[in-house]
Image 1 (cartoon, rainbow over the protein chains, first blue to last red):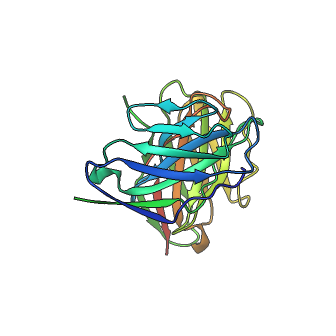
Image 2: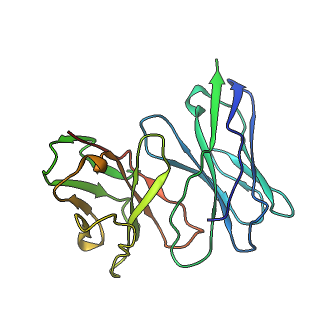
Length: 111
Length: 115
């Protein structure tokens, strides 16, 4: 998988929006952008993914830059349960595609 | 609906023993992956099943590791003659399809400790 760069950690207050950035300047035209998160002692949890257009689902929104070299995961109202490590991953469009996690961003949410 | 279920959630065993880990994927998901995650480390791919096709075993670290998937549903990962370096969290994920446009849904894993 192509390389992504994320901040090591971010902090937020409960019920405030959170914008988690990800840089992926070497993205190819057919790479999908995926976001997963992992809470302590739990398996990774799928959050959202997209290719070119912005995406919304019940958990979050994904804003993809026009040149696709960066993206932002948006949590509209952070809750304590959103405290986790968030991983931004590029998945190549070649055969099946396994997941490779980098270090991710640890999100801390304060009440 | 029901997510991916793994059992046991924790397993402690002595070095040299065999262990069997079970994964129940989400119903209807054709793709199934096994990964392992060591403390503070990322995901290490082990094996991939897609429908009735032959599995991709390219990630298995040694011939002590094997896996099967019966009836395109439940999967078991077997580790023979366990070693201390096998200690890790073993994660199973399933997906509706094989390509990068499909999300993978994970279980909470089996935490394996080899004494």
